[in-house]
Image (cartoon, rainbow, N blue to C red):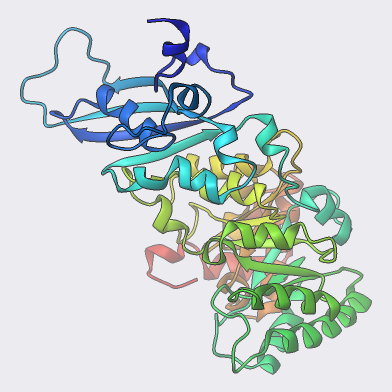
Length: 436
């Protein structure tokens, strides 16, 4: 076999591909023992690049040399060498495939079409990770503000930011929401967001909320000296989602929120890269579980919650934290946060926002896990405080201050009433079935 013939094969050594020209995807494959994954993997590589289930005349050797995907690794776990147990029912494999970046271009829709695509219908195959070449990431502008930019807007250089989700989630009028916004802002919340379940509702217009809440934001700033970002939920159909974004900014809104998986990555990217939309964007994670919750199928959480929304331009991304009501493993939570904030070529870091039933007692755990460059998100943990949302916000700020000073929250609470009441109210809320 000559060199040209070798280069046209759907297999290669890991050292035999140019990592500047290929996107490397790693999969977990869980198949019945009778299926020979080392033989099937190259077929899948062909299927996801130049060919199909039968030879076609247009798939020439030259086309294959330039555009065929290559299996660069097939590793079984455990790593059998001499024999395979005779009664083995299933076998698990890690498969790495290198896809020519030229096939995809610098965009997310064709990335997902290629690295997930038809493979997602091939049984128990889960995309574990994607390694991008620099040229691919260079095609994205990423977060417009990032961590440093959001901090600059708010004038908060070091401490974790506090976010409040207005509760109830939906069904309330603008007047009710305005009072809840006022109290959350007055309590020290740096960001107040719409819940993902309310956008431009017939009973509560998104643009009316912007006009009303931003007047309140100015009033609270004059009283406290602290700004509050209001992330209005612009999620909608096309082109309404773009109209919502532009009109909200025209009306003075200082941040936006979008359910990025519901509308699609390209929609958020287009809004983030629009020069006229000069405010931070908060990406909400709803629908994410449909991608990552299966242990053997779909896409790993750190891609869905981390790397991909960062590429698409989110400045803050909500991620589930393992300390409250969210079903998530601790290291998965940390991995999603790393994919948002660790160095990634030219992209600015994105704020990870820990969320899901967070109460003040959990603040030290969150900060120990992720440091200070985080947003701590709470809904019921603020609004359901026995003394009301202002006290709820203060309790969180007190817990943050205590942790930054290295003081246990229980000790700090002795001189801070709001925190003391919160710690007493929510000792271990989820063991009692209480909704937070």
